[in-house]
Image 1 (cartoon, one colour):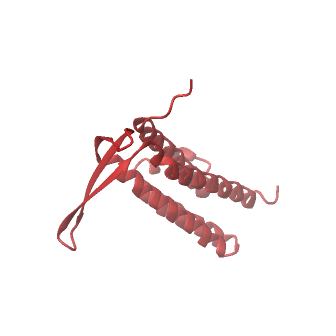
Image 2 (cartoon, rainbow, N blue to C red):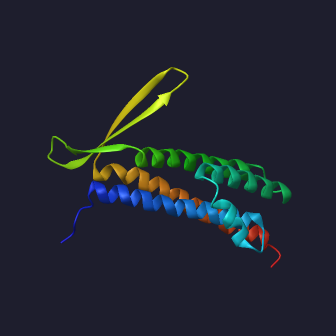
Image 3 (spheres, helix red, strand yellow):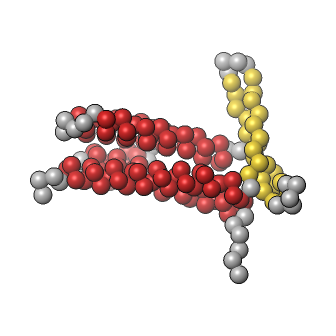
Length: 167
């Protein structure tokens, strides 16, 4: 008998799946740092939040491309991928820092009612947002994370090829 994932399962899976994306970013930072002591880089990364890691890997990759005098479009493509990941990280933060209530839709299916508020200081308001999350609501998020992980793995492979091109 096949069980359907619940909204609780899907939310937890999203958080864990996102961690694999974060590990890929960290691996790229270690690779691009070109150091024999990976622990030194890991020590620094433990003090940097995810948005800082995204900025760092974006700049490190651009520098790597410039030093090797590779085509500039490669930097732009990588930067675009990092922007996609930045949006995913905003989604993760929204999901993690929201309030949740139970929801039963008109079809009798259970899910979450996610509530989040953000301050818009320039407008002097607090903006309230609600989202109905059914288990299948996470499908697009999972696809976006998996696509980004795959892209980062390909970049890692390219970096290794560029580093060891003479081997």
